[in-house]
Image (cartoon, rainbow, N blue to C red):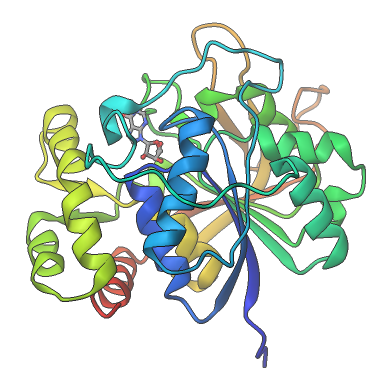
Length: 321
Ligand SMILES: O=c1[nH]cnc2c1ncn2[C@@H]1O[C@H](CO)[C@@H](O)[C@H]1O
């Protein structure tokens, strides 16, 4: 029987569903958030840091450190794809929030990840909600990082389904495919929660109404910022609900029994028209020839999710906040 909450670091590009996941984490007694690290994706890294500090101020949790992450990809690429059309120009539903009062810590995200994994070997879970640059940098910085880190839960990939950037690629993997391939083949305990799973977890307009009618602080805040996210989903997917990508990945760290997964080797396509494609080798065939999946460490890839249970947890924990 484990009594101590699981220590988690959320690597994040807030982001509307990131805000939901961060608030969920703060409302989940099973986990203790020991830091946020920031990355580009939904917004540029500078704004991600600002939004991370802002969200912690909204939550009254300025005791949690924020470490700023990379501004460029692992190959030093500065031409980033930013999903402001999903989250609004400010990343948080165009609400004109005041700038945060707090500041990030001196250490970089990668340094913070390395240090925390070293202090608590096997005990820290990273929940990675954006492109994987910071995690790959941590792996490159410290040869022991993959061993020291407890688990890396990745919100990313599109396993045997279309992507959301284009038919091949999901946004977080597309953001830095080289970094993703480093993380997937690092030997760390990796659990990938892709959009093949998160697209099953939908918050409906009726759920949003319920959030709006609750007095919960987080519920009230999220009701407002969710408007932009709903508009985007209606336009892009012709649905009146939104996908709970980041909250689902967070809950996979909180309670792994909410999902099932398979184990295999994942490689990421880093060039060409399928750049960002995640391809799982399920080990069902022993190939005669050596290939790019041969002898690489396995990871876990989520295949099913108890979607009603995830939505219920999100609603319960955010309404009562
Ligand atoms: O269509 C999209 N393009 C880019 N990013 C998206 C899109 N839909 C959602 N996200 C964002 O990327 C992650 C999941 O891939 C989520 O963080 C989500 O907010």
